[in-house]
Length: 583
Image (cartoon, rainbow, N blue to C red; front, side, top):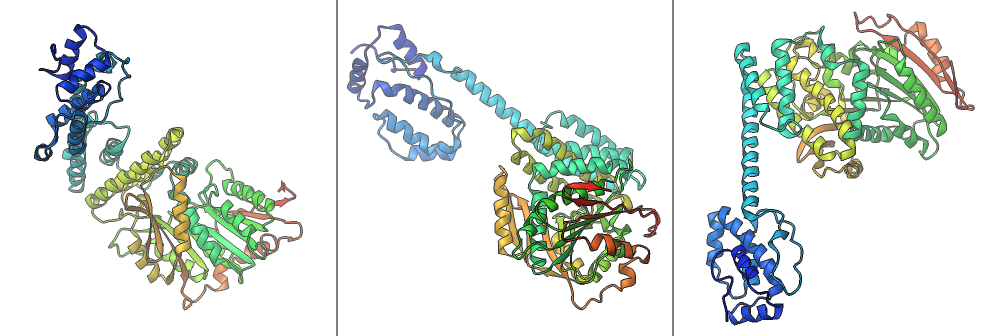
């Protein structure tokens, strides 16, 4: 019969021996294999050899129980293809990734070994090296988390020397991990925040440098809105609740605690324009920080919204209230009018009014919730981070923040496409500043005091607000909203009438709706109106000419100094008539 190349050695050595002798036709090779008792055709040999190579790799590194399982089953080894495939199926959980198949050989000849991208020994070496590097990075990442928590504990105990030494060690460990994504990136942000806390502590006067200017914050906010579903979810849920609360009212008034660039309101204006029976007269009061460059940013936003309202035939009036903090705002600045349906909208703002837990002094949140309830709103929409970053223990809130923002950054990395990488990098700065405030600042300078939904429920209930069920329709629409994003880990959950948006079952943001208890006495007119400007407001901002779609604007500026609500107010009126805006 002649020498048989597979008598000894590996498949590769057999191929080499066959290649050195005379070439055989496919039919002759089939005959030789059949005579040897193997039920396999020559055209299948390349597949069998490739499978044997994978089988050798699996057996060399696979678990012992898989081997035992493979040996326990009896197969007919004369049927090479079936035998190899059967054993491979038993070892499928431990196999290395399948390499691309080599090019098909020329019919009637033995395959050319050069069609493999790497010789098997080199391939195996590369796999081992990659595995070792991955294990080293994972070990360094675990070490980083341990060092971060240890450093936070040293900070809490006031041992700045030890904390500084740990920071230096963490900087060395950071060189061994990929800081472009995952825990390496998040750890880098927290190391920087710890370093700032130790070497340049944040005070009330320096908190602005941590938060950045209002213009910078608006840019970061916009990018965070674009690359993630969190703010879209917040705006969508709030608008849905407001729209339902305004049903049947001809005059409606929205008070927005954080206008920014007005991203939330075009959708509501368009929804009101399509309302059965015609749109109501809409007033929007937007609160925002004063512009340091003298530019009336609030009024600019109002003008853009007015143009949209005019284009869809919604009667519209805008009023801007510039205040550094929400607790600087007084009810009379909002000019609530009897007979109109009022909605108060707070997206990621109320936590900034909280104080230290256990502090006997009244926190600003108490006074703000007090006047909110007494203006008798039809709906109060509250969106907050689903986190617990207001604990009295620094170590506790540091650990909570570490895991919360790890999940948040993970969702951004998974959900962003290649075209969003630049926007994603800017959006991450938005989150990085939150991390810095939580870790670096204390006292009045620490404003990122996030608390979970269960605590907000108790607080809002004590203030005289009653929960409004968002409903199953809102749940379905929020779930549909997530289909716009590529990340498959986002999830919406309903919790006692409220909705949460999370990543892989970890809630990250919550949305809830409330209304004032009917038993709470409303504010007297003397606190709702300022006699010096009430006449002006009633004649220009409220009584617009419905026939020519006149839209009216006012802007009021209030600093954060001593809380004197009457100090430094400035009014600007503009009309939008036929698409032409004039002062």
